[in-house]
Each structure stands twice: as structure tokens, then as C-alpha cells.
Image (cartoon, rainbow, N blue to C red; front, side, top):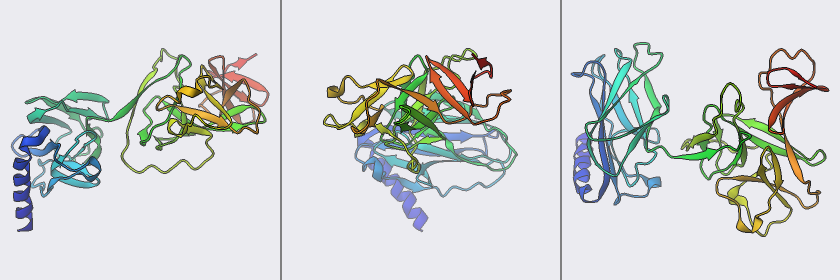
Amino acid sequence: MKKLFISMLAVAMSFSAMATQTARVTITLKGGNATYSLSSVDLIEDDARSAAAESGYDGPCFMNQSNSFSTLIYGLIGTSEYSTVATNNLDGQKIGFITNKIDHQYTLEFTNVSGRTLKLYDRVTKTETTIVDNGSYEFTVANFEYERTTINNRFVINRQAYNVTLNDNFLATFSADKNVIIPEGLSAYAAEYESEMELLTLHKISNYIPANTGVILYNPNGGKNDNFQKNFSLEIYDGTVPAYTETNDLKPASAYATNHTGHIYVLHGDMMYTYEDEASGMKPNKAFLQIDAQYPAPQRIAFRFNEEQGVENIEVEGKAVKFVENGRVFIKRGEKVYNLQGQLVK
């Protein structure tokens, strides 16, 4: 009876929201057998709903998989699955699904499409598809083992991301008030300022950049093997990311104050230089270095990468230290310096 009541309530609420709906779509998941493999989720964006942080929703997912051909698709609110999601903002809405035991190829079909433009982003293929009425999107589940598989981190509606352009040295600074995913091909680093050597030692961060954390971004393969990628998209991650607790002297743009003390440095080329436009504030989503006034203010501050980059055939002892000089990356072991190809630099 409770299930019936909630289902009836979902229908009633959906109809009552029609006058204020700003977007809607029904997404149907199909496997190879269209008779048994159909499963649908309704997404409703309604400006009369509560704030995104308090997303309202209808209809808990009471569906079940009755046979080996059956599939499931649903909207995710936290970790809960729903056959109907109603909220005032569908941007960032995650779509999960469960495969059947037969197919490794599937199709998403879009119907009942209305309102503003919605796009489906596939994190696996890194493609974005505009949702149109009677449109569709085909995809494959890799490494399919003919068992039901739950996949909750592949599809998202109107993916929210920060677009970043690296400079000619394939470097940039970055910060945001949201957690973000570090995309493939890009590395992110926290930094520790060593005043005695006037160097900024960079420590690599894996997988995610926590909110309100200043970092250096770098394409380690930039300029090599015809890799000249400078434009990257850092997707917002709504999961939990622990704060970076190691030393990090880079500050997020949100921490900048025009009445600051000490010395401010920003990225220029392949080094940090004194910020000459302090009165204008800090550019959004950038990061900066602030040195205490008790320390001298060097003209520029070079980087030193505290990591190994998989350089092969360097048969010398000692810890490898990576650094950038004149736009090129080198590795120092002991008293010898090598390029990224492992060749000795004289």
C-alpha cells in the first residue's frame, strides 16, 4: 500500500508541476531484446522545486529485473535510486544503470523532451550528446562478463566543469570552490616554498583536486610525440574528497585580499613572478603564492618536481628530481641532468 501511495503521489506531483517545468526527458535503456530489456527514468526540472541542495524527487525505484534480459536505469540522489527525479536544476544529475546478463551493447532513447537544452555526458567515451525528442545514444559496456553489473559513475546530465587553458609551457594555476576530477593527460601539484633555495617544490596530487585548494596544472607530455594539448575540462565531482593536509603554499583565488601582507607571486611562463596587478584582485579559478614579509622577495621562483616520470635507462644512483628550465623539463640525479628521454644534458 505504501508503494502504491508513493507511486500515485509521484504522478500527482508530476502533473502539478507541469505549469512550471523548465525541462523534461524520459530516458529508456534498451538491450538487444526490446521486449524484455526496456527500463526508463523520468527527469523533471521544475523551478517551483526546492533548492538543488534539497532536491525534491518522486517515486523511489521499485523496479526489478524479472529475467536475464531485464535492465534497470535510474536517477541517483546521493546513493539512492529513483525512477523519477524532480528538482529545480538537472545540471549535474547522475544517471545509473544495471546491465542484463545478455548484452554488452545498449541504447539510450530520449522521449517526452521539452524545455531547455539538456546534454548527456559519457565519462567513458568523453562525448556529449544533445538530448532531442526521439533521439538516441548507443554505447558499449567494456569487459562485459554476462553478469548483471551496476554502473553509477558513467552518465551525467549537463556535466558541470571548469575549462582550463595551459600556457605555452603547458602549465597553469587552478583553484575552485568545488571538488574536481583531474582529467586524463593532466597532472596537478600542490607546492611547498623553500625560502633558502627560492624554489617551489611540486608534489603530485592524484585523482581529485579538493575544493578551495590552489594547484599547479601541467601536461607532462606537452610538446612530445605531437602532444600539444592545452585545453582541458575539469569536471565537478560531487562526492567526498578529503582536504589536502600536506604542506601547500599555493592559495586559491578566493583567499586573495588586496590588503594582504607579504609578497604575492603568480605563474608566468614556467616560473612564478611578482604579481604586478594586485589592485585588480586575483583572476577567478587561479592560484597564487604568498610569501611571508619576513622573507626576501626574489625576482622569480622556479619549480622543482618532486617525482619520477618513468624515465628509463638512467643508470645512476640517487633520487630523481624533476624541474623546469626555459620551458623544458629535466631530471636531475646526483650531479647529472637528463632530459625526459633519458639523455644526458651537458
